[in-house]
Amino acid sequence: MKKIFKNLIYISIAFLISITIFGIILDNYSKGTFTNHIIINVDDQEKIFLHGTSYVAVLNSTAIESRLNDNGFKKFVYNLESSRIFETLDDIEQIISHKPELIVYGVGFRDIGFMENISCSYNEIPSYVPNRNYQEINSNSKENLDNFIIIDKIISETFSQNPKHMTVNILYSLFGETKKKFIDDSDVIDNRLALNILKPNTITPISSLNKIVAGNYCMDFETRNNELDNLDRIFGILKQNQIDVIVYIPPYTNGYLETLSPILQKELTNNIKSISEKHNFPLVDLSSKWEYSNIFSDRTHVAKNPDSIVYSEEIASIIISKMSKNLSQ
Image 1 (cartoon, one colour):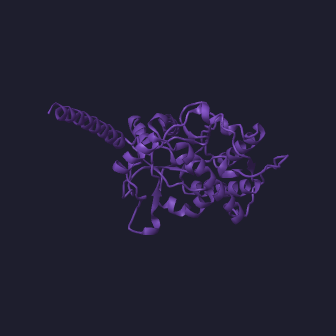
Image 2 (cartoon, one colour):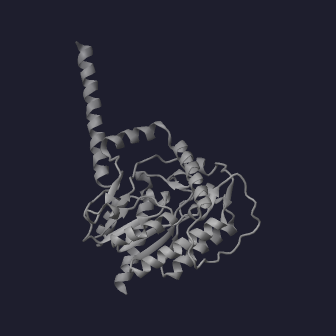
Image 3 (tube, rainbow, N blue to C red):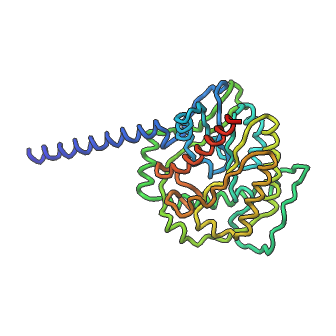
């Protein structure tokens, strides 16, 4: 009898702990800690789009929106589904049709051709010469980018497979959405834009990431030239449609930055800067801001984790600074 009573006490305690965890998770979920929210019918909203590849996908749009609201800016922030530069060019009309007030556009070094490959043999860095015909990126470069993204995804998933990660994934499957989300101005299906799903993962110690001996990385200058041309065209179209843009280079670990020569990193940064400044869009370089901080899931991606919220808060601060400056003009 005593044993049964004791077991009931243990079960009750376990149940109370589970309920407490459940409450905490739901509270964090509702605040946007674990997910990006979704609102349909966005015609009359003052919208901000976060856009780019997987570097941008980890941003917490709800947390950024809350920070803006706290500072007197009533805006709706949406993190669009990850899209490479040439893909964004294909979708630019749909993006414009939603009439965002501001687009925060993340451009990483991988996005313009610095990718993992079997060998590197470049002895010099050719200058970027804009192609005024705006030829879209060729299929060979697309294939190279696809291969690199697959490799990078495998690396990311390898780093994040641990019991804590699996536990968070189980919680997410219970409380999160697994279906693709869309924002939609009308009933026209072709006008829909998919949103990123902020599925949480764990932080890998920076000491481990910065000790990792990365694979051979190569700079594909043909990809760089094509993608910068595409970016130039995208920014020109956004400018013509009176959509403001903040461009930024995402944060990386020191372990990743060490694979770039200082000369190449400076060149790529200046390439992105030249395109941004041509259209009077500010560029913020966050590439080395947290290179020794414990906020990354792998060497190139900030973790989707409450303890990495500093990244989203920084983006919010950049937006607030930009909007405050606009108000004072």
